[in-house]
Image 1: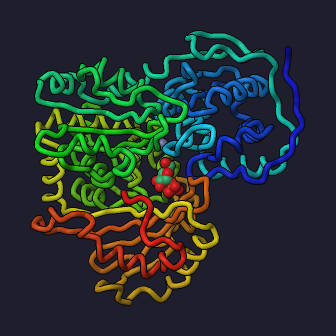
Image 2: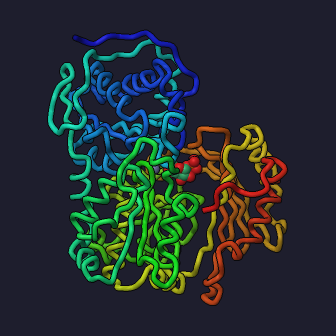
Image 3: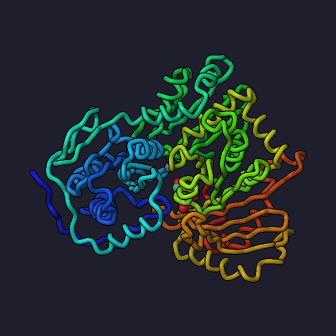
Amino acid sequence: MGSHAISTHPFSDQRPGTSGLRKKVRVFQQPHYLENFVQSLFDTQPGLRGETLVLGGDGRFYNREAIAIILRMAAANGIARALVGRGGLLSTPAASCLIRKFRAQGGIILSASHNPGGPEEDFGIKFNVTNGGPAPEAVTEALYARTREIERYLIADGAPPDLDQLGTSRIEAMSVEVIDPVKDYADLMESLFDFPAIHQMFNSGLFDMRFDAMHAITGPYALEILEHRLGARPGTVINGQPKPDFGGGHPDPNLAHAPELVRMTLGPSGLNFAAASDGDGDRNMILGRNIFVTPSDSLAILAANAHLTPGYRNGIAGIARSMPTSGAADRVAEQLGIEVYETPTGWKFFGNLLDAKRITLCGEESFGTGSDHVREKDGLWAVLFWLNLLAAKKQSVEQIVQDHWRRYGRNFYTRHDYEGIDGAAAAGLIEHLRAQLPTLPGTLLGDRRVTYADDFSYTDPVDGSQSNRQGIRVGFEDGSRIIFRLSGTGTQGATLRVYLERFEPDPNQHALETHAALADLVRVARELGEIPERTGRAAPDVIT
Ligand code: G1P
Ligand code: ZN
């Protein structure tokens, strides 16, 4: 027994992206690959020694093997106590909740979020800091630098404990506590929302919903909260059993990847409410009968109605949204007389604003919504927030959304993704756009005049840190916007994201189909970016 130093060589491709390090499982299975990354984390986070570390993942293929390795390495690196979710499971927001609740020094979450799982698919690892949120860039860059020079890693002998048994054991001097992955998170949800009112709504016999866990992490959480604590009828949670390959599906809650759920909401007897979450439980999709609520609208609606929930009864301090997210929330902030912040894509940019209490709610167009209750976006939290609003307002989802548009105007919004395109072609497309930025303002594109064109940069108002080149923005006189960005989370080739937005104040126009409302902007974007020529694609792969 004891710990050993194992010599190793650096890998050159361990730079974390928008949300941790994501690679094919096969890449992670190479000898020393996971170990190098984890040791680089411990080497650059000396504050973890003698402290508590939270550990868990979304249950995808390789989750258990990775946890066994990380536990032995944590023991060898002087971690005092590891809190691990039973079965090696923890949703991303639950991990954030545990880090905060148990004052851990950090957490390691194993997930590639909404990317497919299985031996030929994706795996990922991310580090969260002591506030419960994703590590800021300074931390991930230091970690990355370390991976470039690493020569050895430390690992303890011996088998790690049985992850399926609750209880405490030891690896060397480190105590390992296998804990219920759901309870603390469910308690937190119960403290924020009006559970008795939601319970009553479920019991009324007039309200039917489904929650699609997509065979990913939220199954056990949704079962406990919706069916056990809130009394929703059995069968409310569908695809509730987490599977290592997510049942072969793509655990991304959107119109493209959850078509059965969408179908259940259609027609005069469609479900009153339906929702889904992703691989690691931080995303959400909200549907009502015959209506899909865009994540950008959802953020705005939650903000406008937050006072109806116990957790946000006293109002919200401010709102933040990622730059490509629609401006719907800005209009609510204006009416509430609170600040709104526009941040680069990625949840890590909300952390400082939340810690400084400048904002209470935040969200991204990519199906992420959250608040200061944890430091991650939170899928089930958004679902419960909506349930609380439905119970309090006694209106349908459609009525709530339409009322909102009438009051604030409607931001038509869509995102087009071109996936797995050639990396050089994608870089060329962005470069080509960048080169046009100085000459675009004042010109006519289609029948709209460009008022600004830039590559978004952000200065964090709390710590002054600067992030440049965060996406090409082209803004028009009528408030419309087109944004071009390359994904930072993909594992194959490049993904071009094109975000399109148009504001419509006139209620008579609100019933337009999104597709029709944005058709001319889509055309402009294709031409401006020379998308078909440069990507070889006639149409996007995914439209959300
Ligand atoms: C995507 C989303 C982004 C989100 C991230 C992690 O990143 O666009 O909003 O924070 O996943 O869930 P991207 O692939 O665009 O870099
Ligand atoms: Zn996710």
